[in-house]
Length: 135
Figure 1 (tube, one colour):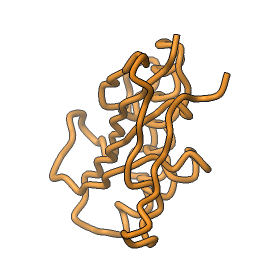
Figure 2: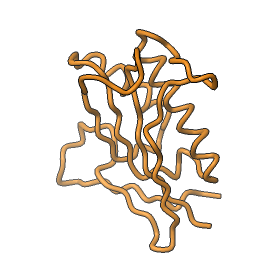
Figure 3: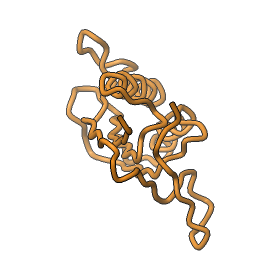
């Protein structure tokens, strides 16, 4: 079933951003608010210690599992926020590239933030998302 999410391009804004500037869902859509996806394995251990790309991938994989539990998929995501524990822009870009590549053509509105620290020891990346599906 195709996604009901519509991505909106804003021709009056720069095309440098690698994502749509807005998204919408139909009025009868069920919204899904996902907790921040962390780079944890099933046992609760951090995956990819000291590796921004590995942690970003683990976050997106866990996000996909949470979406599946809500009968949704990446194409149903309306927006994301990518949190990266670093003051180095290169680390943010490393994490962002993994998230962007995983989402592929479904380039949802996103915010990329450098933060001081995240919740788990050795955690470098977290990905938040909101999705919408029509039942």
